[in-house]
Image (tube, rainbow, N blue to C red; front, side):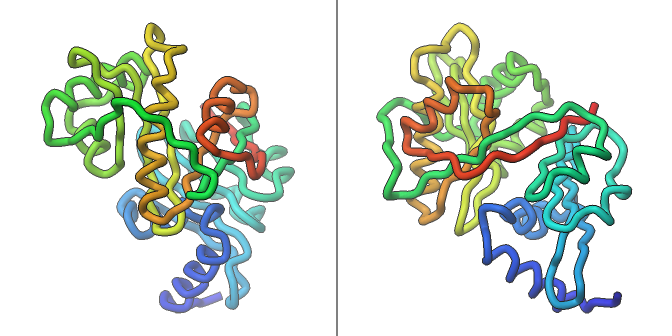
Length: 248
């Protein structure tokens, strides 16, 4: 079926506005990450019935939504994290990888319980911030170079707790749409855990999301009860559980 680009864009926009929390990745990547993004749509010409969104970085990030079965054979080869939105059976049966359940949690201005603390905004043009960010990423097991560190700090919004030039904990918003921000990369170095630092860093970035008028959303493994308690203390509430597949 031949569809004009403006007609497809209208369908995508309508889909996003119908459920921003399910389609934030789609709209964000088409608008802000188009150089790294590929999308294949299943459409009847009037509406989007399903899609496969692929974002390319160190690891492929793949999102399957709706009636995605005809698109499964087009998933690129390579290391990937595949998120399944909606019906799971076709993907779980055909994909080879480690499956895990993740809980989507959200908070808005009515439910947010901020906590005070010394989290600061990390800047890409502050050499001290960049060097500390590189070190905590090494501890995290995600070594990156200086250029990539600056890119992440510039394009995403990171908060962290600094002590004597060392980052003890970080959290960021890697998607910032008017309706929803997605919070992630929450990490505390092992020797500083149990002190509430993750809650402080997550609270700081959540505050920015709430202040912008958006809903904040994050994903947490269903087995990570300690992290879930931290987020619930900030006012986050679970809204659904979905399957992720980790393909090595």
